[in-house]
Image (cartoon, rainbow, N blue to C red):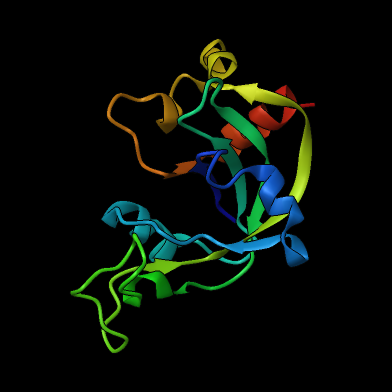
Length: 153
């Protein structure tokens, strides 16, 4: 099993939104960065656990825990001309963009803010904290994942 941190802007799609979805599941669409796409397409597997991270907001941080609940499949928004994620170079025969389904697992008792994460030496090597790591999907070590879980309980 692998562990991930996936970022979403809470005014676009929040952890609470995920909990309200049918089956508490949502396709993670709209990823248009090749490295983030490659993580989904090549490395994410059903059952992998996710730190659901709120970004681009007043207080960024980990809002809850989710899991990967599907194999990768083509992101249909790349084919929809009216979508902000439309890609004219993508075809159904040769899709460029992929997604996975994400399912709610559990709430944290307390939100783990970015500022709180920065305070802990055990998390100092976390990719989230490294300069230039602005990807919406980042790998997380098991130790980092478990440490953040403890911070949230």
